[in-house]
Image (cartoon, rainbow, N blue to C red):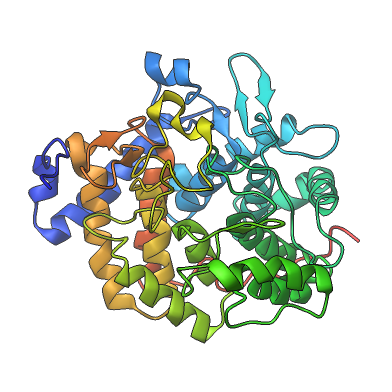
Length: 415
């Protein structure tokens, strides 16, 4: 099949080291342009961005951007890394939930159709890591009340035997995908939050995570409800090397959620054997070719039992598109970070180059996502978290300490 991506920009044809250096410069410049008094916007300001809601402070975007900005080595970005997290805290719901996004112009917080669960998780991660890096000093103390309320909101959604979070479908970053019940991606973040904040039952969360999302090699705790949940996957799952994308009462997802599997590696849920198994499966599926990384191993097709009619809304989540098989440079940054964290530093360094090329397409467009087959640039240009994820990836291959390796020792903020 002939692939169309709008052609490489002049930047994409540069010599490797020059391209990597240019990517860093352009990433820093983009984040500087997109950062205002309230924090970093999801995408570069434009009429289209305003119409689509991208000229707002998003919970997950702001936290990921905060990490990239903190690791950028740029004084201005480091100084402003926490701005968006503070804006989100100012619009926290009375029950503790952090908004999906805050429209600063309208002074309005949005919490999504069925509730957005991962904005709160990413916000907590951003607060904890920036506080550990003293960017600024005392950040967690300043937001201690907001942190306590956010943790209480999450704990109210935790299953009391599995110690895993439960959620509606279309309620996290993959916001028009049918993942529901116990979701892989969400629970990787929850385990990491538990480690960062000293929340009870973290070990049980990790054990049950592996037993539920990979029942092929791990045994779930002796709880008959769990055995029933695992039964369906044991009978019908096809891609058994990867963690399941979600597990519900009688159905599950084995389309291969790349982001969730990478976070399981990065955030301490996968042991050495599981890390190697997962990486081998992702490499064999070539999710990193030609650009890192395609976010689904095999898209959900219209004839699949998991297909939902809303996935065709605006023709956005058809096969090989958006969260259903599109290529996301932001997730590509976590791909590089995961390779580095597993000791595959040469491969991580090599993968930084196609990640830079993806950002460079369209004269450094930093496009939101690419079609997984044709490579056509899609979504909003000037994506802040693409720039931040590139800076995070570059940090991880530089030989510096891995940002997710050892959660900061923190006082227990919730009992």
